[in-house]
Length: 155
Image (cartoon, rainbow, N blue to C red):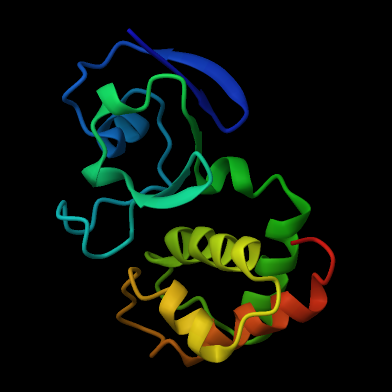
């Protein structure tokens, strides 16, 4: 039994310590915003915020998260910050296929928490672990810049 906080709620998982967080979130808790893209920690589709840090959940063993806090897109979308990011992403038509967007939104959050006024280089560096096949990244970078301005004071 592994106890941790998931999207603000204390829970207990029946998973083995060697199971991947990605699989437990999807299969045990039916959290589908985390996507299985590569199983190698390369694409960012399975990104979550673990104890305040963006991580690829496919690379996290359940045994390592005892007592930790995990935030997925499902939990994050209940925040004012999500509203600002969602509006910014919509304003520049970021979403195409949508597969990478949950991970990109969480990466955006982590960028803005670290630096509420990021440069374009800061943003590009911050999303570098999240792959997107559709947008070419420019609209994502623009959206994060817009969110930084529109959400001034939230981060």
